[in-house]
Amino acid sequence: MEVDRTFFGLFPHSEIEQANLSVDVHLEKLGNQLDCQVRLQGTIEVACDRCLGLFDLDIDFEDRVIAKLGEETDLDGDVWILGPEVHELDLSQPIFEFAHLALPTRRIHPDEADCDPDMLDRLEGPEDGNDDEEPTDPRWNALKDLK
Ligand SMILES: [Zn+2]
Image (tube, rainbow, N blue to C red; front, side, top):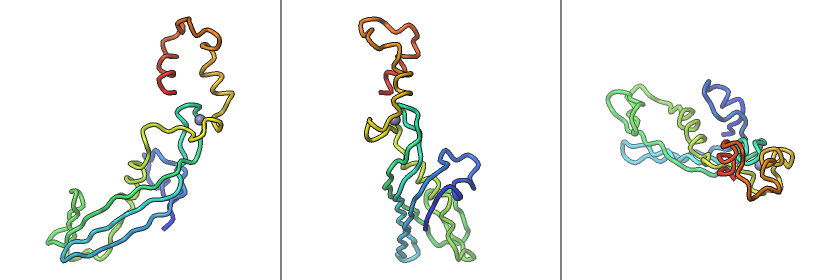
């Protein structure tokens, strides 16, 4: 299935707004256990940590949902228990979570040349030509760590 802006718009607290992901689900039934291998491939729009510009980050992420057939439905644990009345699996919540897990903590344009030069100038401005001087504002140090 395809997952995009419409899907993430259904979740009020989604960090992701725009994405173009194709989701493959491979379901294997082993006795009374269902093993759903979920693979997300495509792009998620994120803000670059270096220049704050938006770009499409390539994603290839795989995780699984394990469910067991049981007496009473319980979808809160690591392993879902499916009661006899369940005939459908709603994977939207795991797909939503996997998409967020797929995001690295550090998100930067893969090619620094794609970073917004004006924004980089503004962020790096106070250091230009003054490498020996301490930056006047300690917040610039925090920004330097991001590079
Ligand atoms: Zn950038």
